[in-house]
Length: 296
Image (cartoon, rainbow, N blue to C red):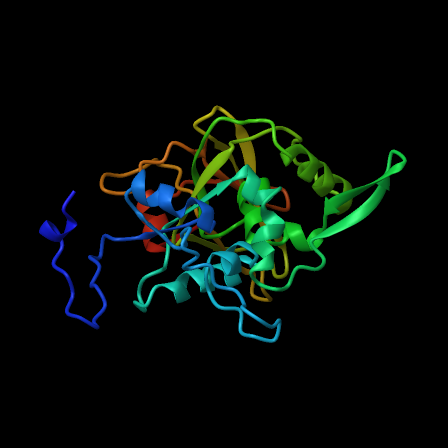
């Protein structure tokens, strides 16, 4: 294909002006060329080792935004800040979609951390069945890669799974065993999609009032295109005036024309609960994409 016949080359020394519809895809650099040639989209990092970010020589350097910085980010807020910093346009994020495979979350993860030069504390040896086994730690499970791939994005405010591929046997079960064993979790120890695709959205704002300082929870069941279900939930405490707010990434009404045609979504409404009260909440796709408020 002659791209010069489609796109006008920028003046020498000037940046190409991408159309508003253009977006990037965040993944590890190994898969950048696949994203370009098969998906015809812009990867944030590629096998030329562009867009990786991190540090070059010293742990004291600034951790530059890029793939390694996003995947190892210890919170959703820090990961999102990386996406926002990657794109030079102030109103655009560097990626709309995040693609992860099981190896990124397991056997490749230590290679991902090396680009930050901050590699300690992600794994620890445990004496199990008369042998030492290296298992992921709390620091690992706090990373964005673990939150997305191992934990299916549960509890994240602006990231939703939109598709997963078939499951294959990987080290995923060991990591889920570690999560349940070390952190006291209760996630199902089953194989899930080898590749998972997530979308970065503004998220709908669900607000309301209850008694002051009361615990409020919201949850729903997500049904993937592979027929698998998993729980999505959040919990918060109302302020002194009883006000609470949740930001949720999934819509309950399905996709709309011109936007992501996702095949993974809630199987029903959100369930909001506090005290002895439960309420069902529906969320439109427009509210998720525009960050609109839904008052309960």
